[in-house]
Image 1 (spheres, each protein chain N blue to C red):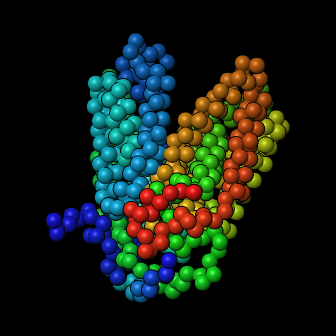
Image 2: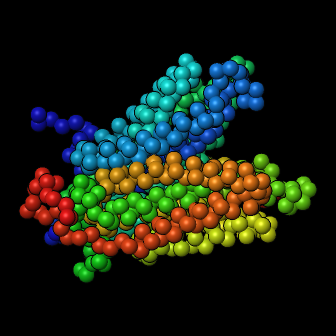
Image 3: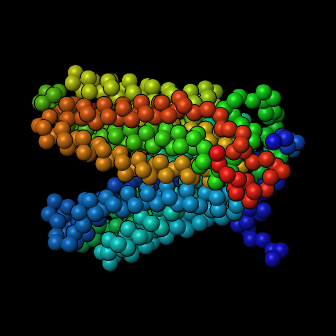
Length: 471
Length: 47
C-alpha cells in the first residue's frame, strides 16, 4: 500500500524550516499528562470509603489501603514493562503513533477506572488504571526521548531534562486539579471519583494532542546550525550505534540498570515516608510542646520535595552536558551517601532546617538520576535506538518502585518493634539507603565505553546484527 | 560511522516563532500553576 497514514513516521519528518524548539513543549505535553500518576494518592481516601463515605469508619466491602495501593503499584510496574516491550516498536513507527497510543491508553485507563469505581469493582480498576493506564505511562514516557536527543545533539541533557521534568511537574498539576474536580462533582452520597476520572481522561486526551500533532523527527543528516561534532570524541561518547537487542547483552546496560535502580530506590526511601517521617522525627517531644511538625507542615515538606525533584531533573541533567554523565552520577551517589549518613545525626540534634535542606538536595539528585539517564544511554549506545534501550532500562524503575517501599516499611516497622522512636526509628532506613547508593556509586565507577563488537556496522544488516552471537 | 553532511538549518520564520511561543504557553501555564500551588503548600512548613 503506497498510502501512508498521518501517524506514520515518514509523515512526521520535519520540513527544513521547522523550529526545533517546538519539540520540548510537544514532549512536555505528554510528560505533564502522564506525570499525573504520582498524584494518584489524592484518590486513596475517597477510594477506601466509596461505600461508607467515611474513611475512619469503613463499611463492610470498602477497599483497604493495601488494596488501593496496588492500583498505583500495578501502573508503575506496567510503565517499566511496556517501556521495555514497546521500545523497539516505537523506534520503528515513530513518536507520533506512539504518543497517540499513549494518550488513548492513558485516557482509556481513566475511563475503565471510572467504570470500575461506578461498579465498585477492584479488578476493573486494576485493569483500567493499572494495566491499560500503565501501558500509556510507559509508551508516553519513552516516546519523545530519542526524538529529543536527535533534535538536540548539542545539548541532549538539557533537552531530555526538560521533558522528564514534566513528569515531575505533572503531579503538581494533577494533585490540585483532581481535588478541585472531586470537590466539584461531590454529592452527599458520592465522592465524585468516577466523574473526576472521566473528566481527567477527557482533559488529558485533549492536552496530549499537542504532543501528538506537533512532534516531528529530523530529516536524515540534519544538524543544528553551527553544530560541529567534535573531531576527537570523548571515549565515553560514541558516534556509532548499538541496537537495543545487542545493548542488553553488554555489561554497560546492566551497570546502568543497577545505577538507576539504586538511585530510584534510595529516592523513594524519602518520598515514600516523607510526611510521617518528618512528623515523627520532629515531634512535640523533640522540639517542645506546640513546636512539632504538624500534618499541614508535613504536607508542605512533601510539596518542597516535589519541587526539588522537579528542579533537579532539569538542573542536574543540563549540568551533565558540561560535567559528563559518569561524573555527575558519581556526584549524585557520593553526595547522596554523605547526606543520607548525616540525616540520623541531624534528626537527633533537631536541626530541622539542615534536615530539610539535605532531603531537598537528595530529592533533586533523585530527579536528576531519572533525567540524565537517556543522555547517558545515548552517549554509550548511540542515538539510533536510544528510546528502545531507555525503555528496557526503565524496568529498573519498576523494580525500585516495588523494592523501595517494601524495604523502607520493613526497616521502619522493625525499628518500631524494638520501641525505637524519632530519628532512631529511621536510622536504619537512612543507613540502608546510603548503602544502596554505595552500590550505585560502584556500578557507575565500573562503566567504560562499549566494546566495538556490539556496534552496528553500516555494511551489516539489522537481521545479521541481531543474529550475531554476543561474546 | 561516517558523519552525515549537515543540512543547513534555515533561519526561523516569524510564524514559526509564534507557534513556538504558543506551544510553550500551552504547557507553561499549567506547569506554572502547579508549581505555584505546590509552593503555597510548601510554605506551611515554614509557618
